[in-house]
Structure formats: structure tokens, C-alpha cells
Image 1 (cartoon, one colour):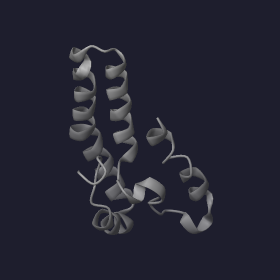
Image 2 (cartoon, rainbow, N blue to C red):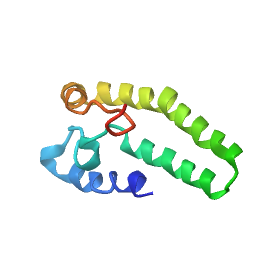
Image 3 (cartoon, rainbow, N blue to C red):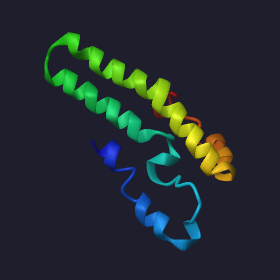
Amino acid sequence: TSLIVGPESPRPLWKRAPANAGRLYVGGLFGVCRHINYFGETLSFVGFAMATSAWWNVWIPMVMGAGLILFSVPELDAYLSSKYAADWVAYTQDVQCQMIPFVW
């Protein structure tokens, strides 16, 4: 989905600028939600489950979302907070939502 690739696409160009060396990218949709691409992944699994028209396939996005929330988000937060310590504190204060925009 566009929420998976879209937010990441401007980051490599931004990182190439010498002024941004060693800085945390907080542009685009990352200014709304810290892990917006994880939200996009979960939505894509919801779409796949809906496309099957079988209600029992809801377990797939539920397990995927739970895995992202319980494992991937904390792991990436720990990595980013150690690599970008100064930027991370300000970023987490400015962007409260972790994975679900305007919710969590």
C-alpha cells in the first residue's frame, strides 16, 4: 500500500544531504505517526483478509498487528532512541502516535 512505501520513499534523498547526517528523519507522514508504515502493513493484511470474504481470515491481520505492536515497535523504538538520542526525545514528544494515527 501507499502507507508502506510512500512514507519511506523521500527518506533516502533526505539522508544524502550532508546537513542531515546523523539526524532522524521525521518528515512526511512520520510527522503524524512514528511507525506509519507498520500501520500500512496491517491495513494491507486487513484488505487481504476482506478480499477472501471469509470472516475467519481476520486472525491474519490480528496476529500481524499484534506482532508489530508487541515486538517490532518496541525493537525499532529502542534502536532509534540509541542511534538518534537527541532527536528521538524531541520526536517522541512532538509525535505521540506510535502506529495508529491519532489513536496510538
